[in-house]
Length: 287
Ligand code: PXL
Image (cartoon, rainbow, N blue to C red; front, side):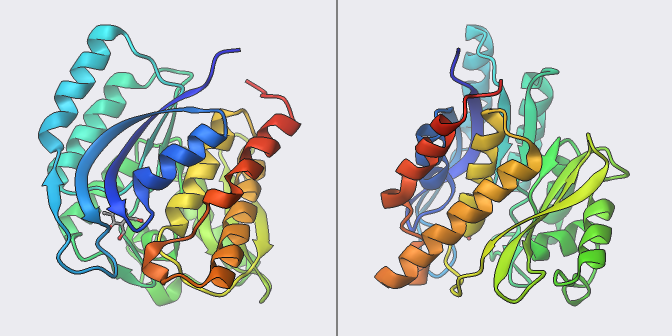
């Protein structure tokens, strides 16, 4: 059996776990090969730190893709996240159009903001471009803020605590059933949090939940989406993958809260990574 291979279009923020410092270890632990297509090199992420460095790697994206093309590299999935500029979003679109094959799944985490606010580097034009990028996806993983931006709705209107509303938003985000949607931050009972999952293959919404642990740590969206991408690459079904992602994220947040590091440093998932490997080994790969 060959190792599933994912092209990961994300930035490398060297401190404050997020993007590639989460994507790479998580995919490796799950038995998936991660090929980073790095979009930028930052000293830290942009949330909670001031004065981060930013080396734009946009100019490297096409040359890296060209070399992969010349070498005939093929991917089982393409997984995209935080974007540094509109140009980068356009290049990511071109990369998807070129490298996608019928058996290659495109997962777009439309990273734009959280808690009702866009991240400070995101302009309205970038958000529109991100919506165009997400239109190419087989699966998107918006949080409540990103759902509001994609739907052009007020954040306050996107209530994720009632089943009927969640179903409605999830279906609205599916572009008439053309793409699957994992809408995160769904909390149908006060002590759980997880996702509403619209599977375009089934045409219906299912729910995946895990214990809610208080604490808004940075990078939990990246952790959730990385586990989801890994589980899908290992042949798990959509809702099962979302369930694993919700559970693992919940376990990591619980552990981190007990350890007590600053929120901006992200969740210390490293000591729990072995559990992902164990879960993947417990059931054989289905692809
Ligand atoms: O976690 C999303 C993310 C990724 N990369 C960078 C970020 C953020 C969120 O703030 O700043 C550079």
